[in-house]
Image (cartoon, rainbow, N blue to C red; front, side):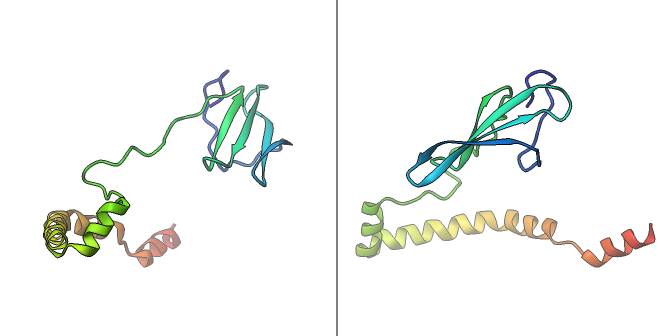
Length: 133
């Protein structure tokens, strides 16, 4: 967001920018881009951050923070090595977890079906609507 006029510039918007290589992360170059705001005379700089697969705003703008929220109990969690080993070696532990997974699947099924119905739409009707214009 431009700090002078508080207008957002979205990721992926094409700009004429000055490009400088300011360093390397292992063998990946780190670039800095200097651009002019499309609505005012403010210049801002951003820098690539290959370590975090992101970019960093250096000056002249502020970054909107829209990182994903941390995992909750309802989301899948990555099992550590000890739990994976116990799942493979202990049949009772595997059975208990299988029952819990089936219960979670049954609880989530109405929501999954709702998402599937909402995401499917008829593209031919969109085409007919657009051609009638």
